[in-house]
Length: 265
Image (cartoon, rainbow, N blue to C red):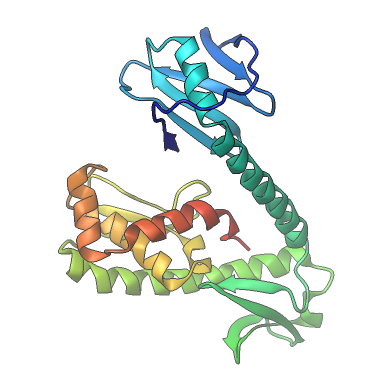
């Protein structure tokens, strides 16, 4: 998300805003040459900020900011918006490619474990098992479970979950001393839209899919949630606590924003 400056630049061609009715309210959309922008008004905002992600372009503005001024502000940032849209499109294509590749696990498929691409090695055995050995993820089973893709995926995910439980508990035990706070309970969850959470009862929840992330990224998420035991918010004091334990947290936080979509089987 980017803020706006007052510098004047060449304005792109803009058509008048299109206004849609949504859920009983007015959702405004500005149409530019190469993109559309959804305007989100808030009585609590004092400044304008633009956001570009996989869902498109939006701008959050103070409730009373005039549409003409909004058009000017967006025009000043149009080059930045178009660059961000190009990145989003590349990311969207990469996600589609990844989804296609995930349709079927097979011998040689690469499994992301703690930031490393580990090849899958299917071996026939009477008993089913999974183990990381000599830089490979070896899966044993009857006829290596060929023709049973869902069973193979479930077996690999079960192993990854168990590995995540071990690694995340170890990480919490290391950093709770550095943070100076201990959780009442550690739960390893299957989240789709978050990496962790902290509840008022002192428990923390961590996403098992962090097992796909590099170790230093896992460390950051653990530190983040442990610091919520000291500050149950995202205030300046909270981020000061995070920085005290992890001075490079901003880089890691940005890495998660840019690469979190990759952390899946």
